[in-house]
Length: 115
Image (cartoon, rainbow, N blue to C red; front, top):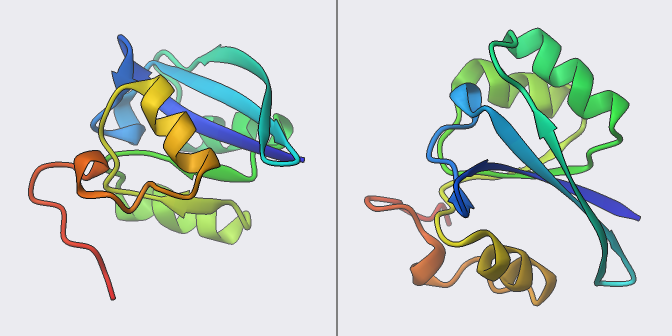
């Protein structure tokens, strides 16, 4: 099972993970979405955000921008990170399931893919 966390703003991927107030959790099994739920992160420190992600068994985070500090915390917790992503949540989840998040339409403006 994979549990993906996506910071949200309205119906889109939030531009900055560190300051988002809501995170969508998507549970995936056998490359199919099984369940969705939402977590609220209002006014939580980065450490508390990490604790919640770990207790929620998050394995992957898909986001737009993220600070170096939070990125390092995710890496230390062995949570896979996909950054530079923008778009409507449903389209991003579908693209993730079909391994198409590398399409330019999902890149944040100014995003440069690392090779």
